[in-house]
Amino acid sequence: MLVTGTVVSDKVKKTAIVKLDYTRYIYKYERYLRKRSRIPAHNPECINAKLGDTVNMHETRRLSKTKSFVITGIEKKE
Image 1 (cartoon, one colour):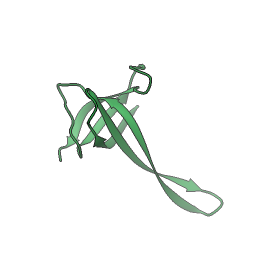
Image 2: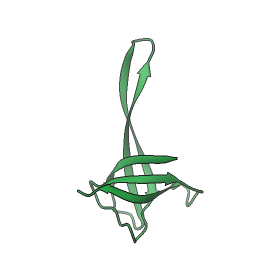
Image 3: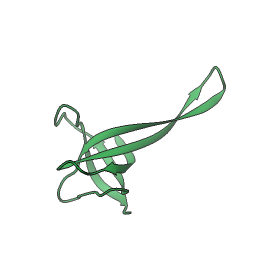
Image 4: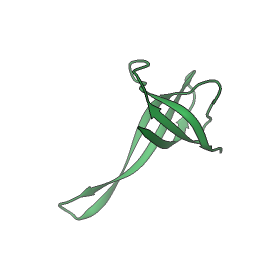
């Protein structure tokens, strides 16, 4: 599964927190709700995404208790 998001934190070694913004339709009110998720992803040293970068991630095997995504490329540098 390919996911695109924005790096909001790169303080942890080899890990980046990526924010995903998405909308969800609420049938009762016939409107959309804006939501966001924060996903910890493995940040390889060869890519080394920084704060504010827009990145592509792929789902992978479980790398740690919280990490199951890996950053595969930078779409737009900040």
